[in-house]
View 1 (tube, rainbow, N blue to C red):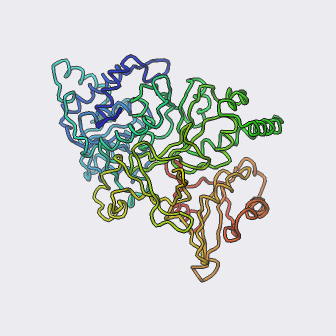
View 2: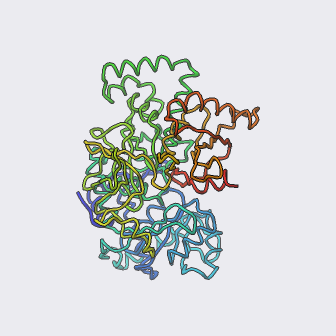
View 3: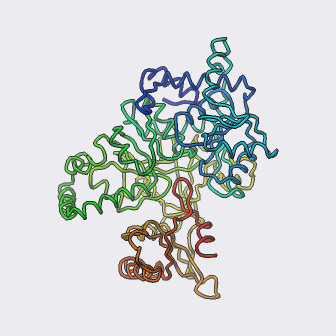
Length: 557
């Protein structure tokens, strides 16, 4: 089934799944009907407050309150502006000013900052709405607005309920990851977002009302906002909110989660932890023997799941999909989980495409690939080299309307034939599987004309024991700025090197790189310089490395 508006999507789900449990929070079950009543009541109150067709923001941790607020805006009030909950004050202030919002929903922990911003006179804020308690003067409570909306509905106020929504008009305004100065404002419509959800429904058609999603990635990010929020609602699933990264494994077991979407770093950490535990228990050799047996007998995922049942019990037997997105997953981790019978797949997308371009399935899988494009999505490579490597361009109805107020960026991102240029360099094999090699703007070009994708080398370095993460960059060997040598920054596990000096730690990793990494790479890709730190890299909220920021912090001090 396909939808043109988010309101249409929600109404369809209420018709089909009214009595299904949508959320389970602290033992309390909230049905789809309960949820719809909250949305309608809050939306009715917002319209009554004069917010019809206005821009309204929401900021906070993943919660039912966040999702009720979102739908009360998109289903008949105005334009939603989801804001990154990790924004520093200056960037939050800038986003509020740039988006011209007139109301904002927020977790109570943001109350002081929001009140302060509202008084600076450079924004259009009229209503400050806490999704929890309110202590400051002028701050409204979402719970009170819902009660007021219930009264208005009882009086026959139906403007929100009967609102006609233009599927092609601006509905969602998203700020891309970046600093205040360079973040872009992506404009999405109801139609673009719903096209994405409909495409995912057609592609992942084995997910439905018997499934339970663990909401972990931040909801302001469109991947979680579409596939982790609107998609489960569209198919009648249950949503459980994760208590935090350290509780993922426990939340999976306690709530019998069937679908988990995470960034690669989470799966990589889970895999390394499991391997280390097996090694300490002296079981690693036995595991390797079972892996060899499974390969020799060409066992299916389900057969492998039975063979490694004891590992699945450490997670949960109910898991149907482990979906990795936002960055490339280390092939060894992907292969390792699948060797054990876990259905770990990669997805790919970008905010400008609402966001999903492709995702692997049981029947559509290839190691290190992001799969084939979703149903109703097409992709091609432009300006390919002799090996078919070029920029990936994607096409479909889920593409954005454009960047708000940025004609220059719009001219760059839209291809002449109406596609979205992703900025990623990729190849597409004869069967239509897409392989991302790296970001176009992060490629390091050497003096001999060779291109180096730092992400490729980072994957290898990240597999070194006690390496938390890494960052590969180019640096001139001499005064000749075109004569580049490759360097790596390694973030090490501080606990494992408590009694070591920085020089000793550097020598430790340099020896490993010279013995285990460089020999397996062409000479022009050899790491010749090394920097170590115990400070985490600067990343977006979905785990992407901010290369320029890290260069400024660690290298070009």
